[in-house]
Image (cartoon, rainbow, N blue to C red; front, side):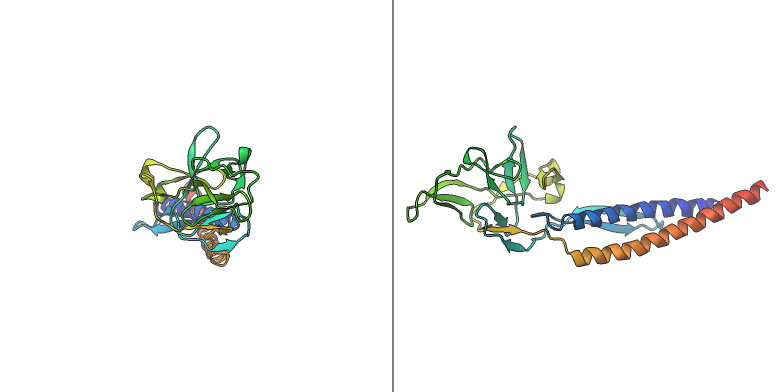
Length: 238
């Protein structure tokens, strides 16, 4: 009976680990169209005693770049995050460069957080330009000399896995992430572009199918062990 209880305990643990992995894959698929989203990987580790354990990590590999032709859009083609500031002064970080001209002409996220220290785009300017190094220039009229109005900063962390997820595809810096450092002399920004999520629909669907088969096998083993356990109880009581 002890062995059957052990099988049930092990099977329950392993099934829960598989369900957690299933949830992570499903979450990746639900964010396949989220700008700058980084997929979460769930590594299953089989211990010597037969119990599964799992380690959750974020894959910070580069997503592909797509052209939008929207001057407020900016993709990061390289490492790092853009700091954004809430109306209350809280600083978070993002790779989602789908910006807009917000209140008083400032460049903001879709929900109104300031980009960097605040970049005010003149409402009547002919056009504005975001250089690869983050410098932002405004042209008052066609043919006029551009005026620098700010810079979009790019910050890098030693351990981005240590950052915590927040709302609206943003991240919060933590002690585990290390100190954020400003990246200088880079050419990572691409105006009129956005970074796609680094999620492969094909790979995720394949992983789900394989995991589903494994989960079914685990549930069948649990059902069999439970039946045998109940029979052993009935025999002892009989």
